[in-house]
Image (cartoon, rainbow, N blue to C red; front, side):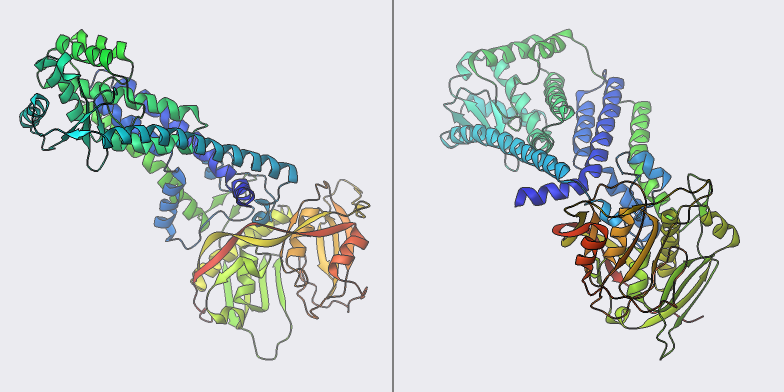
Length: 612
């Protein structure tokens, strides 16, 4: 059950994960280029750069984009608007699924059983990889922990005297404890919060005082640089993203630069290169390397390269002003870019002349009148078209449901009780040029643009603030019934564009012309008799003409039209069947109950609008 829920979430998060991985990979490549520019400088500078590349895998750019959106709009509108994608998002998120249909809230869970099984397999493999890696590390840590437990604390001796001398000369106020271990593991720093030095028993007799001091100096600098903490952080990255080779490559770079940084520190404190090199070789002769990166020793990384670097006599330089300027500028660009994109996204959501691929722009309504519905008015209407958006006798909840393309009541939560009781009449008019451009778009795109405009109207006049939240909810999958579909393929009669529409000819009667099954699922989601989000899983392509008649449980329902509302509908021709039976008998389709992650809207705040 857990794996199935995880697979469902991965289906939704897959595009986000894909974006995060390629962005983090590009970030690591940029860091690699910067380290090449600093190859003649202190290794510590390169070490911090590699650490930044590692941390990037834990910090997606989308957080910075959200920060920019928050700064721009204070989260008035949060998340991607259904069926509408800003051009900037298509650049920063190539896996965003720009071809999703207008009913975008359902598209994230509209996956085939084959795709679901594949995702389940991937989720299982990913979890197994994490378990295997963590198990290996835990096994190694138990050995080190056992060696530490069996060690004796040194209170005197040449090792302790040398350590305290190094701390005084280097002005390092660490007060590290030394534990004498019977293990053959190399000298290493164990622990993060209170690190101790695990010193193998018997190695000191093979080291002269200068060698002993060089090895201890190396370990002291591991403590000062908090290398165990950095290694532990990257181990988390390796466990989560074990499948990504760049992560393991970054781990090797971190170990390489941390050891070189400590080598440089030892030489700066006065150790002679040949003495220091001999101390490392002697340690390797009598000890084995630590099995965990978070136990910093002295023999890590490519030993041959380290010895060559130590004996070369080359002096590394501090990072100069010009190099610091380049680093600061690069870091600022990498951080500022997603924030600016978030600001741009925010400004696009308040319709600052958002440019579409076909050249049309989306602008707020030119004028809008909002009034409480007159008592006794039983006429209900919610329509768009002819340059207008009109509601009559509609609650704020109904209007919000249209604006965010909500298919069922379970997708909207929060807000005061009046949003479901007090009703409003809205007359909103588009600018003539905007209306003309919208008429050139397919109906799904027209609806998406008008929804954006209504969202802005709600934010402006109702002071609406919302946020998105994913929940596991009951849904219906629209599938082909046994015996096959009974839909009529729409005929192409000429070069003129066909008129796509749907009409509700009263309660329990829907008529559709030139519509796909995705739009049928969209319509079914809004029917009180269904009561759940409906996801199209028929895999039927093309457009169809159809008529659906059923006996509704609720006597009243709203009129829906692709271009206008049919308010003078005749009484329904009751077929005496439920909508579920009617679907199967009349259209050859059926609704299959399921459960899946659904994008929901949570109302954080809303106010009653003032009349005008």
